[in-house]
Length: 365
Image (spheres, rainbow, N blue to C red):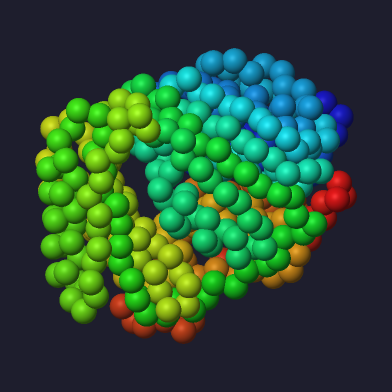
């Protein structure tokens, strides 16, 4: 290992692109040179895929850093960060690789830039194995802004598997410090709404069928709330390729936001896609936590950097969250504890993730 270079095993725990995203993001913010080896070692196609590579190149460009060994299929990279610059940056996966995952790696970095940033992210907006862009705008945004940051996400075009071609523009101003958050009171569900979409050559009826099936499924569990899931035909000039799917969001009286989502696949009926999203939402409302299973791990990096103690009540801890905590502790030296919540009903299982953040200060502003 090179002098002062942190050694990261990319094959442990979740063992995928997430380790790369958390570690390069923190490396950039903290100014810590990294060596990551065994990248995606256990995957069917080990090493860097196009979306990981475009994420790494973006972080390198954001901070005028140095990146070695970064090519498709590579299982080891060296990264030496420089100073984080604001301004306009472009990342293009050239595939249906997720723009949301590009946002996950770049967003924490530009918070600590010297001036405002505009990120042009190109790829898949509604892709499998990643949050849909609607999740980012409808759920992630409202919760992550509780850390005292603000961002604007403009969806220019939507892109679907396999072609990609979508583009979102994210605008952010830097912060001096992040505030800690306290998300421990679930409150009562006050609102359920959503968006079922079809794009390309797919008929509008599919959107209506997904919506109807989802509403019916939710009504079995939640009888006293109006469930409003809009069926949408994406405009031809605002979407590339064919796709269908939906996202359903629930808001609570204390400002918690949860979602269930699903994407259509060849051979899967519209009803089934609708029911899958509804069941995911209901599952995340049952555990009594304040965030859903997909937001959990996305908050860890912000908790580690915040100035003070953050507490978040969640359902069962996911492998992604365990992985994020492990590497956030290793890089930032923040201390996390995860304990079973003591004040829960016998029929729920939730945990409190607590973190004493390091109070990272932006010295550029």
